[in-house]
Length: 331
Image (cartoon, rainbow, N blue to C red):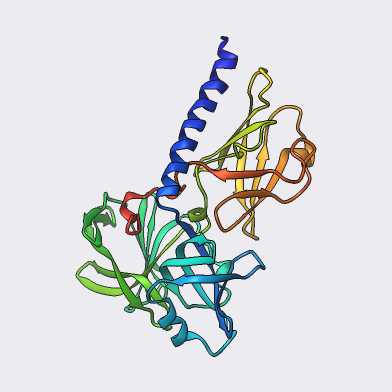
């Protein structure tokens, strides 16, 4: 076999193996990250995901969702924003692990892109952002900001700890940071409930507050997707990388070479996933695929495409895209 054919075949084989392992993992512990609004009326609780208009009956409410909804709602039919891990059952959605309850009804427009975790202190209006390479501490009132190189986090039961030092002013001044995030309920200054609590010390000054996960759109995504085994005319495997790169493999099951197409992916303002392919022979609208994510993480094509029609659906078949061992309280 030539090198030209060998590379896509090896990539296809690795994608299929990852897909099988991913599906087995999901069946053992099905979990999806959802954000949207929770509503109660005479018929019970209903959940409406961000970016979707359909309401879904709630079959299970994890603690403390019912209590916090009652505390923050202004009456029947009043929507309350939530973030939670959950699963789909035959009776509806199960909101098993709440992460945040409350906040502005415009919260669906907030994505915290590039921020892995954000904590807001009750003192000095200080914000702690855990990023890929840094921990940034910025003070909203004074516009002062400190950027610490992100250290390796320590795992201490339900607590995650980061410690770092830095110098400024040509080495004349030394700054010290100790930040701890604990999986423990926290009430924010505006009444919202958070599943994570902040304790921190910066240059001998102590802070406490609440914390939440960031990169909110990426929590819904997986690294690999594929077509269902029930589709017998072709087999598609899609690999998404956190940096925006994408690889699509097409096998038409006709003993012809596998087609490999590369490109980039991004999420739109409406929460859809847009795939822009760079392969030869595709131009204009034919090189762009737009998918809607459903509650179970599947990608559904939103438009007609000359090669795939209107019914293309890709199933999650890999690990969740957000793989941060330090933020693994719910794994």
